[in-house]
Amino acid sequence: MEQNGEASLITKNDSSDETSGEVNPSSLAQTNENDGKIILSFYDNDMEVRGDFFPPMGDGTPISPDYIRALFEKFNIRYGIKKNDLHQAYQECVKEQRIVKDVIIARGDHPVNERLEYVQLNPFLTSTNTQDEGNAQVDHRVRSPFIIVKKDQALAKQKSRKPGKEGRNVRGETIAFAVVRPEGVSGGQNTRMEGRLLLSDINGQMVVSKKIVHVRDSLVINGPVGYATGNIIFPGDVEIEGPVSDGFKINSGGSVTIKQTFDVTNALTKNDLNVAGGIIGRGEAIVKVGGALKTKFIENCRVACRKIVSVDTEIINSNIFTLETLEMGDKGCILGGEIYALKGVRANSIGKKSGKASRIHCGIDFTLEQEREKNNSYLRILVVKINRLKQLMEENQPNAKKVKMEAFLKKLEDEQQKTQARITELLGKLKAYEEAVLEVSGEIAIGTLIEICKTALFVTSPLKRVRIRLEKESGKLITEKYS
Image (cartoon, rainbow, N blue to C red; front, side):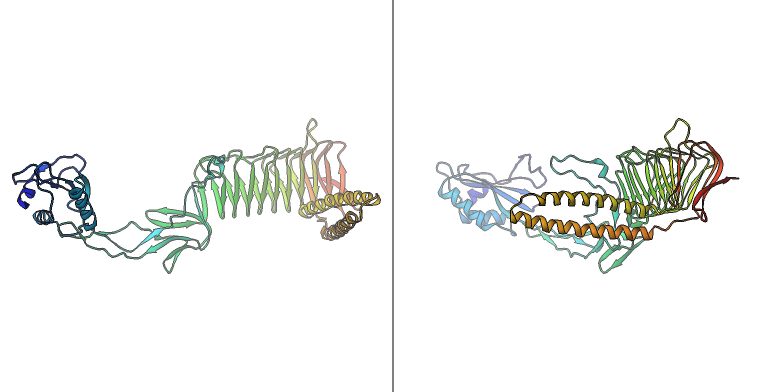
C-alpha cells in the first residue's frame, strides 16, 4: 500500500516559480493511479511545504498514516510540521472522500538578523507642516520645508543592539542569520548626547547633512518667500535672498535681513529688520521691530520700532512709531501718514502741495500714549453702559431683575475706577522728551501738523531748511535755520 502511495507522488522542483503551477513527476513509477495521494509543493527554499490531498478513485487505496510517514521520510520533512492542520486534512480526505487543497504541511523558521547599535533620527520630526484634515480647506501658507526644533528637544535616539537568531527549514537544516548595520546619524553643531538621547542645545533649524545632525541658530532662504516656503516662523536670525510675497508672515526671534522687496502682510522681529528693497503694505500691513529698522522706502504700512528707523527715500501714507529717531536719507521725503518719533525726525522734505497732509509727533513715548488712548476709549464705553443701566433701573423693574442690575452696575463702576486710576498712572509716566528736534533740509509743505511734547505747530506757509524744537522757557515751538 505504501509503495503504491509513494509511486503516485508528484512534487514541485524547489527552483520552480511558486505561482507558475509547474510540477515535475517523481522518479518512481505509479502502480495504481486510482490510489489516494498527497501532492507536495515546496516554497521559499524549503521554508514551507504545502500539500493537496486526494481521496482514492474506484478500487484505489486511501491515504494511510504509514503512507504519510513514508512520504515525510522520503522528502526529509523533519521540522515545523503542522500536526493539527495535517490531521484535519487527513480526516476530511479519508472519511469524507473530499479533495483538500493547499494545506500547510510544515513551515520553518526564518532567521532573525542581528542589528548593531545605531542612533535613529526622531521619526516624529517632519519637514512638512500641513493643515490637511479630511475635507478641510488647506492653507498652503502654513506649510514649511524647514524642521524647527526647540532647546532640549529629542532629535534622535540610540537604539540598542538586537541579537540575531538562526533559522531552520522544513528539512531541519540550520540557516545562518546576517549582521545588519543600519544607517544611523551622529550629533553635530549645537547638539549633545544625554543618556541614549541626542538633544538640541538651542532653538533653531535642524539640518541633516551626510548623516550628521546639526541645529542652526539662523535660517537662510536662498530664494523668495512664497508657497514653496510658507510662512517664516523661526526662533533665531532669518536671512532671505529673494523677495517676500504678499500674504506671508515673518516671525523671528532674532534679526531679519531681506535682500529684495518686502511685500509685507505681517512681520514681527525681536531684533533688527534690514530690507535692501522697500517695504510695501496693503493698507492693513503691520511691522513690529524690537530693534532698529533700515530700508529703502515704506509704503502703506503701520510700523512700530523700538530703536532708530532709517529710510533712504520715501515714507508714503504710512504710520511710523519709534522710541528713538526717524532718520531719512539725503532726499528722504515723508508723504502723508503719521509719524511718532520720541527723539525726533530728520528728513529732506515733508508733504507736498497736492498731497495728503502729514502729521509729525515728537517727544512722547508712543507705547504709553497708545495705552492711554486705549484706556480712554474703554472708559468712554463704560460711561455709556453705566448711564444706560441707570436709566433702565429708574423704570419699573421686578425685584429679582433689579438686584441683578444693581450688582452689574457695581461691577461697571469698579471697572470705571480701575480704568481712571490706570489713565492717571499713565499720565504720570508720560514724561516729555524735551530735547526732541525736527530737522528738514528741504521744505515742509503747507498743512503739515508738527507736535513736540504736546505743543503743536500747524504749517500755514512753506518752511524751508528749518530746525524745529521746543523752547522750554516759553513752552512754545520755535523754528531755526537748519544747516
